[in-house]
Length: 276
Image (cartoon, rainbow, N blue to C red):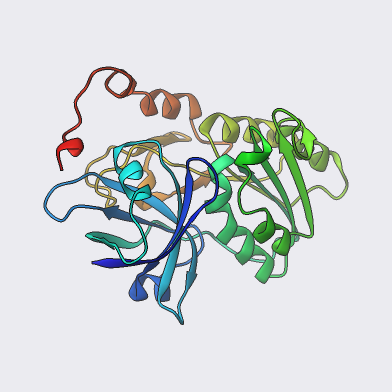
C-alpha cells in the first residue's frame, strides 16, 4: 500500500500527486513509468509516467488526466488515502548525454513525462529549448517548473489565449531551420502531435525521440497489448520503450490500435470497475 502525501489540481481534469514509494524513488530514471491498481483484489492497471522523484523523502510524483474509470477514481482520492498496488520503475530509461542543443516539445498532459527528461538533459550540460503547447491557457501545466530548466521557453496555444497562437510544429520548424540546428528533438504528447513533430524534423535530419502511451495491461511484455511497429520490427512499448525513434514509428497503425475500444467507451458498455 502506497500513501498519498500530497494532491494538487493543475486544471479542470489534470491532477498531481506525490506518493510514498521509497524503493521506486531511489531507482527511477528519466523516461520510466509505474503501473498502479487502486483495488487490491480487482481493478484496472494503468501506466503513469514518473514526473518527478525525491529519493531523500522516498516519494514519486505522478500527473494524470481524469478521463477514464480508474483515473476518475484516483482523482477522488485524497492525502493519506492508500493505493493498493504500485509497481515500478518500468520501461527503458531515456538515453541521456551532452548532445549540444536539444529541443523538447510537450503537448498537453505530455508536458508531465517531458519534465524529468528535460531536467536530466539540462543536468547533462545540454542547451535545452522547450516548446509547450495546449488548447488554451487554462490547460497549460508545469510552466514554472519548465521555465526553471529551459534556456529558452516557447509557449503555444491553439486559441491564442497565451503565448503564440500556433501549433508546436511551427516554432519547431523555425528552430530546425536555424544554424546550428538542434542536435536532438524530444516530442511527447498526443499521438497526432508526435507524428507531425517527427514529420517536421524529418527533412532537416534532426534525430527525434518520441514517448508512446499505448494500451497496456501487464507492463512486462507478455500481453502484447502495447505492441507497435517501429521500422520493420514489432516492439512492445512497456519493455522496449516507451521511447522510440519518431522517424521510424508507424503512427497510423498505433493511432488505429488506440481506437480499438472507442465503441465501448462511447456507448452503453457497463464497466465492472463501477461496481468496485
